Length: 254
Length: 254
Image (cartoon, rainbow over all chains, first blue to last red; front, side, top):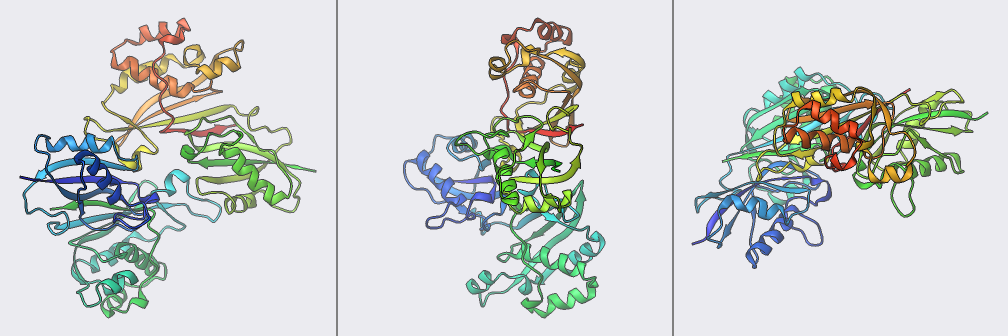
């Protein structure tokens, strides 16, 4: 009987078109499926917890596949896959799950982390080793206001204004409500971190939430006003969708 | 009269053959010289404080060049160069120096930082976003012993055993003595940092010092014994030269 194996995966998204397999593009899913095919000597389907966009990194993406190799302890897939994978993808863990486990449909919570590095002054650029995993921020925002905005999202929230154009096309008539467990900012040395945890996310949603919060904080918008803007569902009122650099799919919880 | 401009430079060394210009290879020096040529409309020579090997990063490399552009404030070279440079090289600062300033010969102290990330357990690989700028360490060394080794280097030290093979060929009859200001290890969250500051370094020296210290710490060698090994000048007794990943030329002081 085939066993259901769950993988925990980290990757540097810079040189990928994203998680999902695409014609003529380098995707994380395809790299891992190619490695699984080598181990199994036949194609193996890998189901991810969700897509990540081009350039988005992962510290704890989850995925599952069914294996017909009976003799191999689940944990041994870690070194076996890592020896076949390019260095910008690493398998962190492999464990056996129930037959009905599905990386996408069984997931309860996804957490993203967005890292910003302070580099104030026009002639003060971010270091190359910082800017690969951080988005440069050219001013110091007021964290208290950003966190007041974050609290507006708590609970069941209509996220229509944060939906990317692509998302809309795909899910026109589906609910844009998401259950948001937490959304907050904190300073970690010279880094500003935005962490957001929800049952699920719309496409580009984290990049839009962060861009919207930073935009309205800069224009001194009070939280009550932002509450109305979010409730309006008027997507033209959202701030810019920030670049993927700096964004990590941090963990997926089941 | 030509003005002497000093640059402070950061780069991600991963995709470079190193600092120094090489035929058919991508070097940091060449990238910046190409940008300087565009600004000046003629070739400009850039002198670095020293070479860094392929794969070694920099947070504070220094270099200087002479400019015949009289009208431009020195600081304006920062945005002008950055707009022409690839993203893995960033100019952090530009300022005017005396005519006799030379990035290499005027330098008093160079500081390197080597970053290691703990990822203990064979099936626990480093994250891609960590392993680009950290060397994975599969055990927790005793920092006290490493720092006792570090103190052995303080002051004028014969560094023969830490000289790379390439260095020897180039400078066979030159002194291998270097003045070492400090060499110590510390823990910074999940990172082990080795910082070493000296008037100058032999080729591959930092990678050899770190590899030697970690090697002898693992085999429980007491500091007195390591003192004899260093004094012996017997290069076969040095530990492995570690990979460049994780090593940064941190700053150059004048």
